[in-house]
Length: 71
Image 1: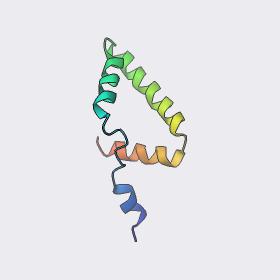
Image 2: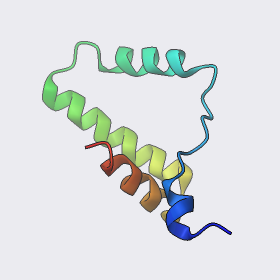
Image 3: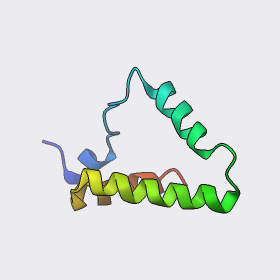
Image 4: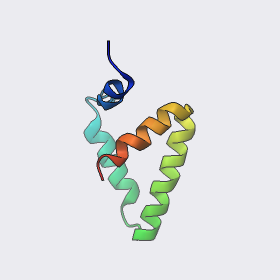
């Protein structure tokens, strides 16, 4: 039986495969030509829009914790 900490330590499944490169290219294209401030603002909007689409606070909190691990 796995504990909550073991479950949280597992990486999320790759749901973009095999289109990861397409998404990355689209993300880079969205940032093309933007100033650093405008790029940061775009990232903030993307995070909020994706959070709204996900809509589950527990999932979002897990994502925030997982993303922090890469810092």
